[in-house]
Amino acid sequence: MTSTPHPASPRPADLPERAAVVDLEAIRHNVRLVRTVADPARVMAVVKADAYGHGAVPVARAALEAGASWLGVAHIGEALTLRAAGIEAPTLAWLHTRESNFSAAVGAGVDLGCSGWELGWIVQAAREQERPARVHLKIDTGLGRNGITPDRWEAVLDEATEYQDAGLLRVVGVFSHLAVADEPDRPETDAQLDVFRDAVALAEDAGCDLEVRHIANSPAIFSRPDTHFDLVRAGIAIYGLSPFADQSSADLGLRPAMTLRTLVSQCKRVPAGQGVSYGLTYRTPGKSALGLIPLGYADGVPRTSEGGPVRIAGTTYRVAGRVAMDQTVVDLGPDVDPEALAGAEAVLFGPGDDGGPTADDWARAAGTINYEIVTRISPRVPRVHVDSAEAPAPEDLLKEAAVADVAPAAGGAA
Image 1: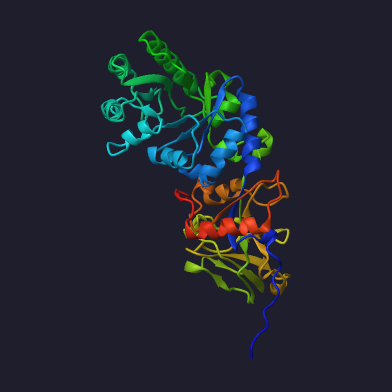
Image 2: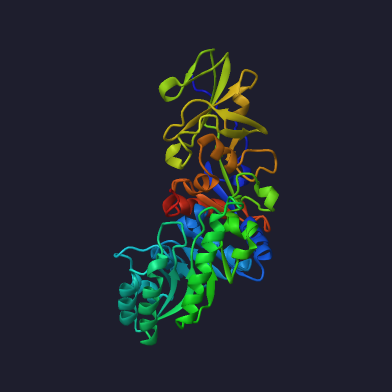
């Protein structure tokens, strides 16, 4: 006997069966908000890690359209991807190794963050390209990662200005990074600012004609206006997520840009005591229905997030048992008609404006931060970029999803 397929609910806007949907108008809104908060400082949109999983090239374009003046990335390769896409805005790359392609960066007009040790490599690249490199010297004001320690700052300045006098580079910026700006009352930020101001003064005294001084990250943009200087670096804020534990996106006026959604793969009734997923760490408390969600830890859903929320047909259910590589199970309870929910849309997180789950909810379930939730979404989940300011045609969404299936966004997993 051949079973008759049950007509599943229509796919919203004809989206693919799995998608991370990114609203570019939300990106623009968030950049405009940051510009207002940071004014008169300019805004660098940080699009490293494939724009925190949102798609670096579309996000960079949207951020620039909304008035961002700079783009920021960690690696030179990320900056070259932007240049290859025709994006010529001022761009800074700040995390290097001795194998980094400094020559390509200088040739493409990419500004280079410098922790001191790179000066020789940067100068060699400038000679190869026959053009001066643009350098931002990084002072380690207390975070303890990359950057020049205060005791070596003057020695590096001497070396850099010698190269500058020889026409091989220009020191156009001084920058640093804050350690605890998401906890605004901690005194370490004041101490870091003191070190930063001293470093800027010494650079200017040494003959550096600085275009930008920058230390503020997303939390400092909102909580510490004394950190704004000439330029602020907005990362998580432009994606609409709050950097604070005690303030939501809505509290700050931000709009989360990403919605992670799929379709319910299967629904079935099970008896009381049914074990679910590896390890059988969850058993149904009574007769129930289980829904199979075709996203797992290979797609970026944290394996540690038992109890994570999934919104189906207007109701939020909880992950039952362990998240597997490709799939996750939710307990739908005893009163659900499994046939009615098979093929329905399942939203793991989104803006939350309809009471649905958010990246913050998943961060709490996984014991992590919202930054990780969005950044870790795997390249095998197609990114579909929409613009809530313009209703996209369904065929355009399907075309973009097809391209993403062939060549998924690079760097989506963290």
